[in-house]
Image (tube, rainbow, N blue to C red):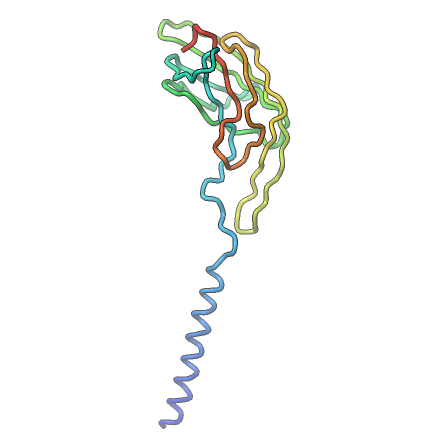
Length: 169
């Protein structure tokens, strides 16, 4: 009987190592997916002289042609992130500035861009990176917009600067 137990214990030991090895191999991945895989344009708010602004008035941003509110009643902000439409090459945004007295100023920002599919591995979801090609505004509350960094990817760098007229804060 001792001979059979030894053979059986060797096969159990081998099966146990095979099981451990299988778990190790299936749990390991060569590619680590980014934890923050949000791709968005970073907008910064500035005075006309180039100094940063913290908004006292309320800012609401909608996507033109939809009922989507992208930023709802932002107040006390100096920058914000907005997604980019990955199936179109132009985004139109409606910016609504309102103050405590009820005065409202509205501007439109048009953002032209390219869309590049970004694939890391089968383990990670597909996302789209963008290259900003131009940005324009209707210039009511906004004096001008400036394209600072055209690459939109996982980095959280400022892409667009919005210079507000002096009566907006």
